[in-house]
Image 1 (tube, rainbow, N blue to C red):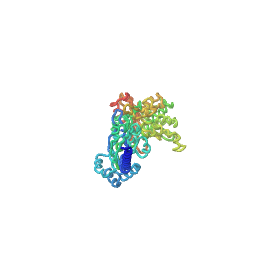
Image 2 (image 1 turned 90 degrees about the vertical axis):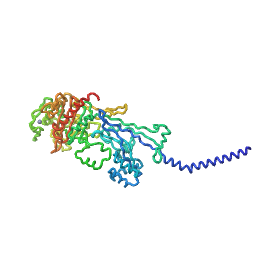
Image 3 (image 1 turned 180 degrees about the vertical axis):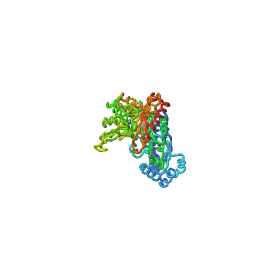
Image 4 (image 1 turned 180 degrees about the horizontal axis):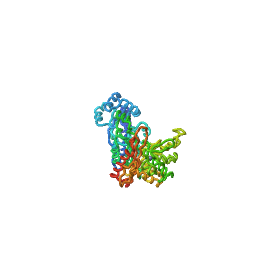
Length: 596
Ligand SMILES: [Zn+2]
């Protein structure tokens, strides 16, 4: 073949090849192009969260207080709603939701209309069955399965979790929260949110238009972990609470009464029981609360949501006399032998006769006997020699006019007035001396939480070293352990009384129990070392007094405060409840001296 022929053939081949290339390119560009673009449009990488398990909450002995369990929730994808009226009608028959509930939900989710937004948590079995039947008619409805919380005992310290709200989401969206996240709303759940929560993981899937997982990443990498980031679960909390003791107190507290009981280990501030009555079941917040139930809770005049341990303040009444006594001793106004004015059932102060609680009178007493029988006249007399503003500092140093700093959010401040406060309130000519008379016996314009009172008596029991009350014993995850010192500094405060003066006060508190005329003699047990003080605090004309008992047991190393709102007499109402607690503890638990 000539060179010319070869060149001709090559030209033809090149020409044909070129044509094939052109046709192929054209097919790719024009015909298949649509297919590829559809493919690219319809498959996408779906990034989803692998939710971390929230840490669970246990008592000091490992008994469960709050645990996770899987639940079915109802989600709505608002963008898929075809007929909002029929959706509303359907939801109202199945779930008792109102049209306004749905409108609010649609408004709240207006920026994520193609996402699954949780509408109702924790469907019960009947609801799920009902939904399963009709769900095909409503492409906007989805079931979502994730953990929710179960609280084993009704109480005021654990708090509860809830879905994130708009404001919280705006604040936390960059901190590993998403629009369906749970977070601690109150109590321990809120206080320790950062360690309970854990860190969510990420899962990547290539899915088709219908959301079907194409399992592509899995087949490429052979190992899902190369693509997914596993979640890091939260830490479990072990509280200082003794759940059996907590339940015992719950059962011992008269069901018809309101009030609070606190039990603390006075050597280290661990709160062993934290009871506020009436209680409420936090589990109601784990699903939609029916409107009628919610209305009846809100209308309940006993205020079951109020945490009376640390978030409500009351006049302390005579349990406060230990502070007046302490001030008098520390400032050398009195010593252990000093006898003050004669109590004949009261005391003439200027043109007023101010009564003692005991109209038969107590005679002339020293501070120890005045504490024993709780004679008001002794403290009236002492009050004449007390400067209000110095006294106010003393009360503050006893940790009674500010928060204790317990690891439960939203603690109430105590309150104690100053001269300035009185003058602002009642004008420049108000009689500070008159107010001091009232304050000396724990009445008038002073308010404290039962928790503060318990911590005060714990401090006296602990030789004047006040321990910050707290509920966290330890947080645990694998080998990592955190304790209260990782969260709270300055756990101890030296109270402003010398050891010697503390022991004088203690003598009085001991006689309250041991002597026949002591106001809580009913708590006397031979061979046991119980100390205490009763109080019956007036608070409103015509109402029963608040009943108080605050004390401690030197064998068990616990301080106990019982507060019964409008309960009547401290000795007759509060002290017997404390007695049951001391006995239960002594018999069943003994001492927490040894680390457990
Ligand atoms: Zn008296």
